[in-house]
Length: 82
Image (cartoon, rainbow, N blue to C red; front, top):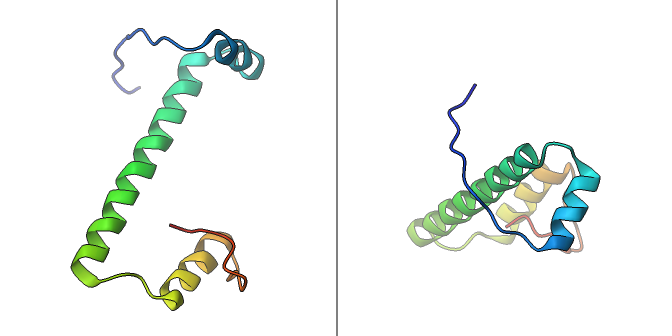
């Protein structure tokens, strides 16, 4: 089991009520949400760093990324992979 640290987090009452409807493990739910947000921010930073070093992604590269993420290239360009 991973090391844990007990903290206090203040959330709006309505959010807590909705959380309790969704899960009886609020700590686990919040931990998963935080992990997802951290991954999102780290990926964004990696993508920005890549573009600073190698230039902006081409439409072809973005189409390939969409295909890998969503299983098919979005011909209309409405899905955003980045």
